[in-house]
Length: 336
Image (cartoon, rainbow, N blue to C red; front, side, top):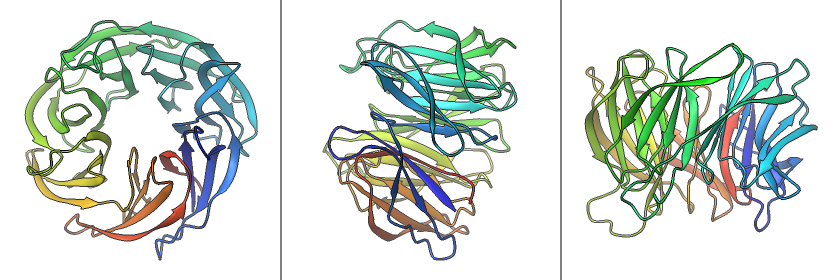
């Protein structure tokens, strides 16, 4: 089983890395450089094998397209900072991106040869009460269960939902206010209930929402991600949900841990445990395909940890922390 890692390239990293994962033992091979690229911090792989990462060229930022063998196809870049999030819509043959620094959500049309054409770019505006909220910071752009595009704007504390035309044009249909100063970063939807879970970076919480479709959210619960006696810096990171809808996991950057929650029949969360990840700054993590393991890269300690997961009770145990990948910021599984 292949695992792909996005990175920053500020110190030691050279781009996108790949490793082999043994699903029986939870072992990761030492990684190999797959594609050289300036700070490809996030990436997504389409069903046909073409891949898309955060990209940069000639001091401009945007997105990079790769063929199934990770040979670079093209850059689609504009003035300013690169994106921070990329997702693929295989049904519509579209690729979505979020740009944190510029406060933009972007849509690209995907061609049969994997190349991209910019189809739309929507500028967000506004601010929030936190010192890191002087302007819009779009951090997430992905699909709802009913196939609309929802964005997390960390700078304005809004979830903005868009209708998507066949040409990839966006029309805003709803805007939901998260707790002021929370800084919504990423979200996941429950696989069978009308629920969504938002990791909030700035106040280290997870906010539980009812989702009634067509961009209609309602907040019903807020829980902390960190221990009550922890007073150091922390920022919420990534959020994942088990495929059976019974457990939720969120990473803490600062406390350097995974906060685990069980999910009740009503969709509400019950804190389960907070487990250290064996490294510094777990910006992202993912469940293995069989969900028996969590793969956790660390941006600031240059290592990747593997945590074993008990599917019955949802609890985690640190298995290893000795796979070395510099400045790793994202992780996803591919085909074997």
